Each structure stands twice: as structure tokens, then as C-alpha cells.
Amino acid sequence: MIAISVTGKRKNALMDLRFGRAPYFALYDGKDITFIDNPYFEEEHDVAPRVVKLLHDKNVNKIITGEIGPKAKKSLDQHQIQTIMLNEDRISIQGIIKKIF
Image (cartoon, rainbow, N blue to C red; front, side, top):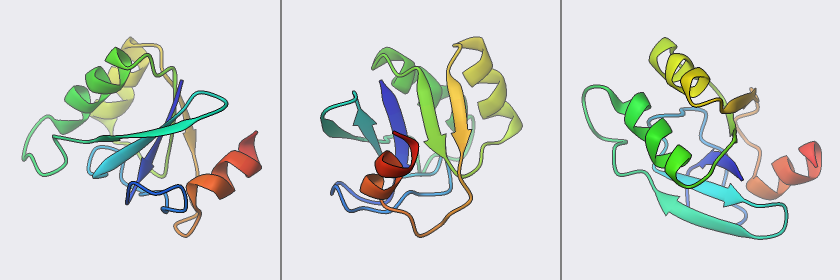
């Protein structure tokens, strides 16, 4: 399962460059796209490890986002979740899927 940090719950939503602060994640299983809320995006502390656990619990093994911090990197490594970094701030979920798959 792949998670993409996104700005909205639509298939044409844009990727959110912020991993832990993205309000939503698009989950892509190779066929279908579903969306989940990020309940931690407005929290003050230790957001990234909680987001990684949330995604790990959803069987995510790959993240596509714009940037991650050191806490996120450490937690992703611990959960053996691969990270794909894109620096395109105006790319949609559909554009990412076409580009990577």
C-alpha cells in the first residue's frame, strides 16, 4: 500500500509537501484510491511518529511526499517504510500515479 500526503480528499487533489502536517493521505493499492484523515496534523509535538504508526497500521509500505524531518525519517526506517520524495508542489494524485507507475 502506498500513501501520498495530500491537500484534499479528491483524486485530483494536490500532493502536500509536508508529510506530518498534511491534512489527508491518499492510499493507493495499485488499483483503487481511498482517503484517510491525518488526525495529528495540527498537533504541536511528536506528530511524525504518530503519523507513521497510523500509516503502518494501514499496511502502508511506501510514502510519497515532499519532505520529511529527522523524527519522521527515524520512524519510517524503524517501520521499514520506503520514502519517495518529490519536490513538485503542483502535482496531483493522478499525476503522481502516472509518473511513478
